[in-house]
Image (cartoon, rainbow, N blue to C red):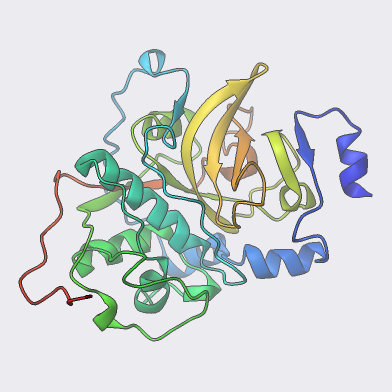
Length: 296
């Protein structure tokens, strides 16, 4: 009924019944969002990103009217976190995959499971985490390995260092986007995919199908995703947001979230907790002899 009634209202977005249809809103939130960003932020204290914002000096009026990192080949196929609150790992990896492609011109699918299993000092695997702590882990760890080397299982596993076959993508740190500032977020997304946190805990979000999402959602950040572009459609400005619920949800796994609203936090809180990885080098370290297993 909710889907039918909402679609009758001639809004800028449509809903449809999907694989979440047999879940109550609470079951849905517990299984598929599950990363209480506010809770993790309280546990971890203030943000750790560099206080710099490298895109601060960008001239808003000179930014392109639309950007889509998918079209620039900086985004891998949509992935699926399953019933594991590992959205933070998918959000982190999407941003690292993006900056790696921009800097090296190679798109490499990277391992969320490595973060779930190994980045456990402060992040909590399937029980949630923060993207910026994951960026810190990747930097300190000397990089992150590939999806092929360390495939996704969707459960909390034991860290398996042997799965790291020496193929690593490195980053040099991360920066936080100034909070509650959609213009700052725009400057960042114009330059690279950005990890963002949103409130995805509404029925409209659960059953989103297409269009520019203007639905009700709060700012109780509970889901990590990636902003991979922006644009406008029929006069409505939007963010292109990459989700991790499989390609059958939304617009092929993506949602267009309304952009430039009156509230500084942005629709669903998208401007509250954004961060992005920094990569200075145009190459990644080559594996040392003996690091790479002979896979023949």
